[in-house]
Length: 135
Figure 1 (cartoon, rainbow, N blue to C red):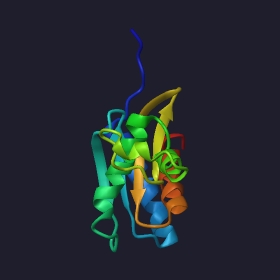
Figure 2: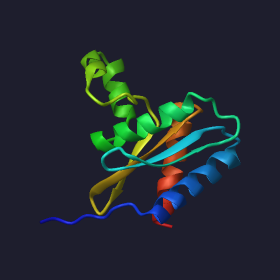
Figure 3: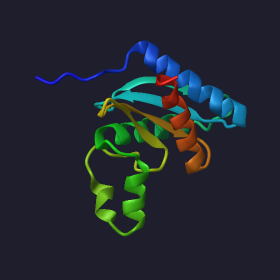
Figure 4: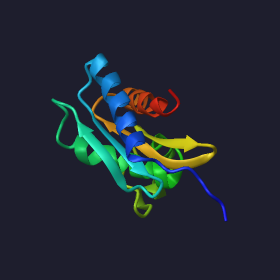
């Protein structure tokens, strides 16, 4: 039987804290979500001024990145490049850039989803959160 790492509550807090600090330093009003490898929500923070809809989009992006085991933006790119059949993919509603898988020792253990600013800024914030695991 294989074993793999899993996110702890402390890991989730570290990711949320680092992502929040990054977004705050940039003046970005975002919602940040962390999910496990099955896409189940482990933590969410909605910063002051973040649009209410971002609290729905952020966890959806994280879910898509976790269960798809790739950046959620990859799905957006496929759809924009004409593969619109992905719009009917079951259980994937966050096919927008801003969801980033968390990979530890070659295993996807979860993902971070960010919503509220430009797509590349959402990704930047998610990566800043994930970087807290190696700090």
